[in-house]
Image 1 (spheres, rainbow, N blue to C red):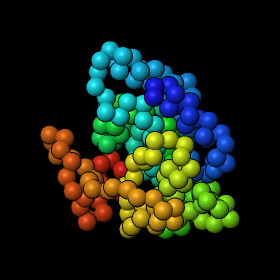
Image 2: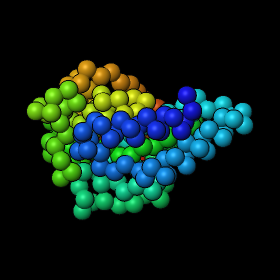
Image 3: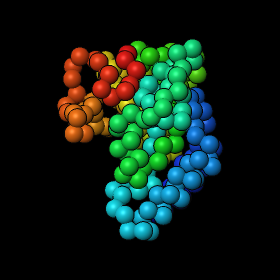
Image 4: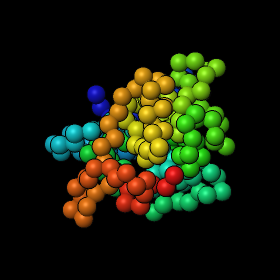
Length: 200
């Protein structure tokens, strides 16, 4: 499937999923389409891109160049000049950022309701909570608006609560890299300075 088709599917899904609170920022369609066109050209030119056209979301305590990072707190918002290394690697492999997902403010909750951007409702039942703090990410994946990858900076098992609430499975094996760009296993310290994520 072409990157352009995947992007069209993602935006069509966003229009019908009725969970706008899952997202803090969605990139303009024209920008995402431009990225998809560039990926499709690279593939046509013979470049090997293992994630060509895969659309993904980023939890809003991880930097994405061109989008504010709020950590669920508008007064904290800043505009990063570059993306976190994990985002850069995904984009380098042909993946396309759709936007930033909602979270319990500063990733310090387990229910997905502590955000000024709105309480994220469950993907399966709008009367129930989603679980958090990775609430927006889990709901976006569960609703199938994109490839099923979201970049998280977990804190205190919050991503497990959100995933379990939606019966999702994930891999959280690394939190940063060394000077050669090699990933290293997650530390238990809760410090996220190496991954350019906002600490919880």
